[in-house]
Image 1 (spheres, rainbow, N blue to C red):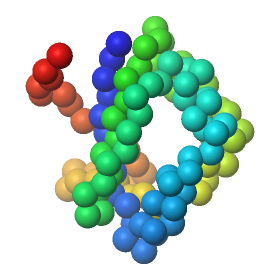
Image 2 (spheres, one colour):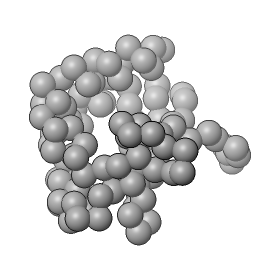
Image 3 (cartoon, rainbow, N blue to C red):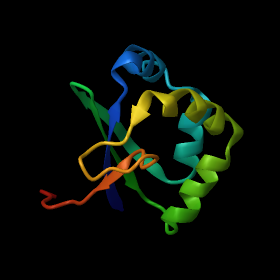
Length: 108
């Protein structure tokens, strides 16, 4: 099992929309993630910053995430959620979106 964490800012004017969408994530989106070995997925918010975390139990992370992104329902979901987000951090570039975080400590 691998752990992944990532961060992005929410566009303040779209924060309510983002929270509304995530109050009831579409079943097809959840099914696609589960089918491709993504488990224990959480998104946290602090002010206008979102932190995501999930565990991956498969053997080819890149291929599984590409398969998730190829799902038509996931593409429709991202068309709604992506405009609510802007890259986090002073080193962010336009289009960075969610940025991976490096794990520095873990208590098993």
